[in-house]
Length: 94
Image: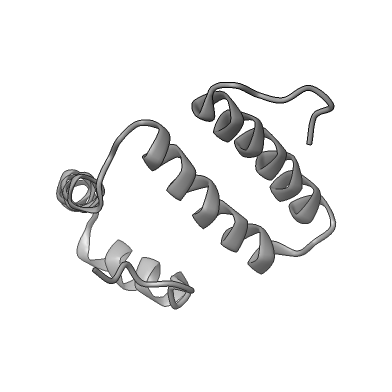
């Protein structure tokens, strides 16, 4: 990665995170959307580690975001949104 050693492990993870984000951008530019999404999962995992966020906190955030979004959607919008959704690539398993 770098020619000089990184003393702090958080700094090392930030360096890895920056490289992964570059890789994701290159994959998207090259049309490899599915692979870029997998790299996004790794980026999320690293960010969670850096910010000391556990799986339960992430799940609670996602649930709250879904609840906040529900009243804004109309029933006909839900049907079209559901039809456009792709099957998730990965599932969070504890």
